[in-house]
Image (cartoon, rainbow, N blue to C red; front, side, top):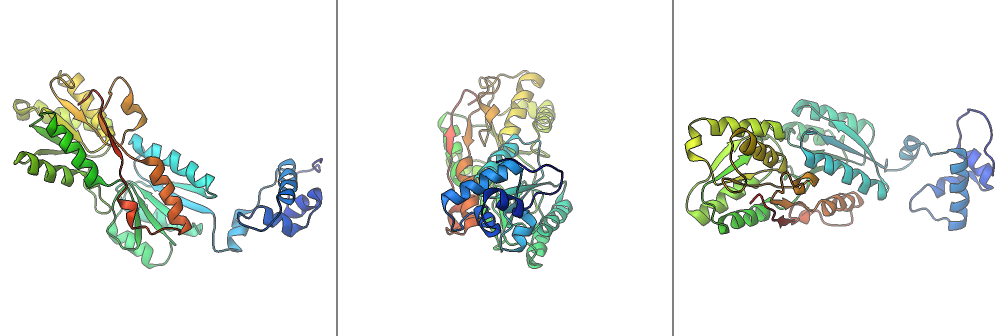
Length: 337
């Protein structure tokens, strides 16, 4: 086969002519579940590759009830877990036949604008990653029928029209708390992320409840402004540089690995304390850098591949969505605790 010369737009008719098939055979070849022989599909794909042809996704979506496009809205690029989520989600979706539209949201109002922007592209679903989402604005977007499906990823949403896909925080934090207590730690400090007005992480409440049951006492809590390791480092440094220095915890239990890494930097380089000899540290997520020898962080590994595949199941509509907020990971013990 030889491609025609020129700079004009390549169409399905050009592919059909080169492959020696009909235009409708070309359309079927690019349709995931269409009835077409492998021989015909191969001829079409070879011709399309020769010509540099790709189907017009907008035209395809207008002719069907599926656009093949999923919007991912994320607000926290400082958190290494979120970039891990983006990489795995986008690759998993693409392998399953969906492409992604990434929208970086700045705050709660911008998240609402991002959802409306995504709806203009007729996306099959929007996936929210992060915590800056306002329940009232989400309800407004859903009420306007602008979104087919709204998935809250990594958190639990109370909105009945959303689907929550996340690790079971209660089970996870119970396991972490039991481990910390079994190792003899008795003065924990929980480093929590920012409070949200929408979908929540349940880690702080689960830890406090379990610790109260095990130790018969309340644990201290310090709230960090966001999931940036640098901010966590500054926050813990300020906290333990004041009067609280007289009550240094023996373990810092962190809501995420990002916070935990910042906490370890504060303890070692700002407060001249040894980890874990003076203060132990635990995280949550098991981001790739958690295993680095600089941190060697004891943490809870999220089942990222399972979560990403759950998104595909939701999009396909092949399974009840109820269990998707109760997915278990596993505790990973390293030298930090």
